[in-house]
Length: 177
Ligand code: NI
Image (cartoon, rainbow, N blue to C red):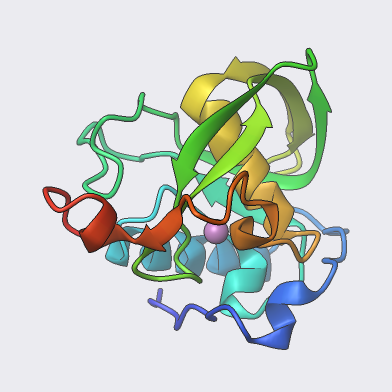
């Protein structure tokens, strides 16, 4: 389909609360999923949310459709490729963990964010099949980051410590931004 321009922080569309998807398995929805996938892969993203390409719908994709490690997150545990619509997140404990995050809408930067360590997520795929998983670690972090986009929240709004925020190539000289 198409690689779409990714909206960058400062664009007011990234601050909108997204609408639920009401019709599944439509040509328009499949085209949107393909655009998101093309755009995520072109940018080596770990995930992307529909609002990041200007579509205010509760739709995120994340994980890797191929077994190769993500060059932007080379040390992260692999996350299965997932298309998630109308998600509901439920923390499975109060435990949170700090971790570095980046975002295709905040290019070139990384920051430390506290996220729930374990959570359950429920929702639907693009065909309307229900999804119900309990996950932890990087998988849990990615889901929370992507679903934040559906509430108009970008990770710099959640920094654990504003001093743990900076340019990727300065913070991690060995990693390509
Ligand atoms: Ni993001």
